[in-house]
Length: 146
Ligand SMILES: [Cu+2]
Image (cartoon, helix red, strand yellow):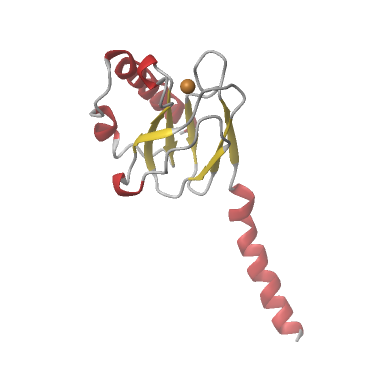
């Protein structure tokens, strides 16, 4: 019995580091038709929560490392939460304000393998220039973390 307990205890200890490292990052909808954090770098297993702190916004994914299973589009004015498990770059927008530049970028595990696909997302001029700016920010953030 003591042996079983010891094995169980050790297995529990081994599982804790992963649990402890998984983080939750919160992003707010702002009154300026933007996300409070436009670019975030997270680790696989982390959760991102979008808080409806301002009316009229949502989250709609445009591109990601697995185009077949992008996170579903959220409802306007709704709390939304996604756990990111697949490394890569994710691009999302607010459905009503994406054209005006309300976009966000998430990089999981500093993995930029699908960056060219992200860049080739067909967007209006303003949104496209915003995405280019966000990519620059993401790359400099990734460098700082190295
Ligand atoms: Cu919006």
